[in-house]
Length: 201
Image (cartoon, rainbow, N blue to C red; front, side, top):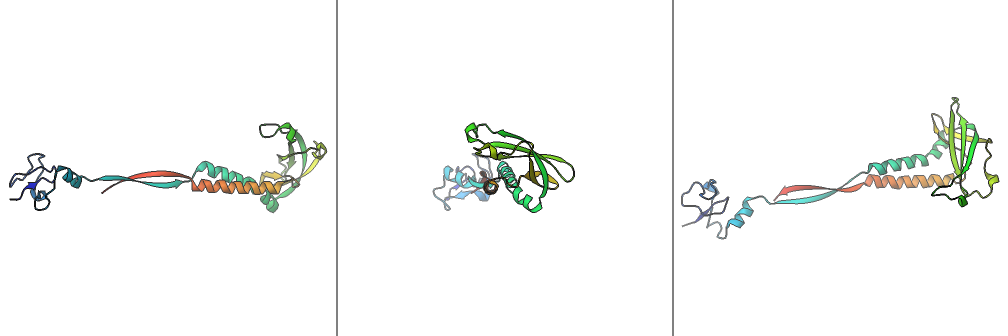
């Protein structure tokens, strides 16, 4: 005589029983007989009847907004020289101030100076600008306050302006464009973010 077991709790069923007296679930065609498996016990039946859930982690990179913003700003500063060369207009300016820069990044012995100037655009707007001269050990090389300078600017975007004969501008442009490119790539690659999902086995 075959012994039947409840599919839900694994306990033995009475002969011709329609419901399991242990868990109250319907027996019917879901009952397991000894002819199908001899080793079916409560532990094994629990593993068969209950879904086994496993978690899989999937790493995905998300762009970093702060790095993207910094990269764009660096690129814009670096591209101002090509923009002025292509679309720039000339104007007469005057040096308004020169001051030695002394801060955490520049000591008095570095002899770095900030030069401030202003000019008037074709539309009659007065615009201020500045640039830096580094390691000026001979003050006679510094422009005198009130002296005339030639300024180039982009019409309609006069905040993009510069003194054409600034020393080291090419190296500065290459550095800014290179740094901006690196930061942009880092921002686009982003940081890894782990998403977890649950699947039934």
